[in-house]
Length: 123
Image 1 (tube, rainbow, N blue to C red):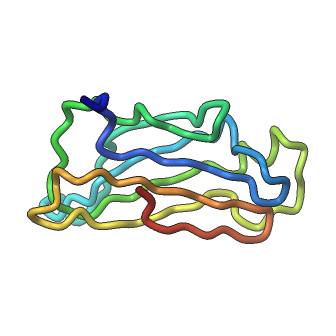
Image 2 (cartoon, helix red, strand yellow):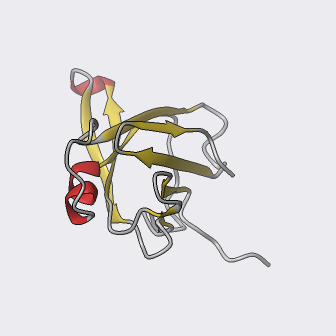
Image 3 (tube, rainbow, N blue to C red):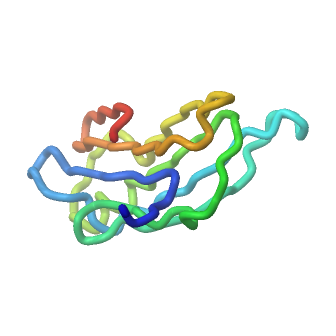
């Protein structure tokens, strides 16, 4: 039997040097339509030595359908790498957990460089 994992995970890869994005602060929020579409904090994490956050949520956490936002604090990462002149001080990825898909796993990879980023739904 496979080990249970957080229902939402992420991974940062610094594509400018081909290495994991270590120690990147990550914040997960959910849009709350009942509160004038304010963002409610769900979890915080920090990428590990492999650039991953696999423990963002407890494995028993049950997702609810809705709009989520993951914010990667890239300014802190670039400062730690002694990189100046980067373009994105943070990266926000907004995604939806559809009704009926709450039990799926959501993996958010971020490929990062000082002047660009890309993302996709991972597995």
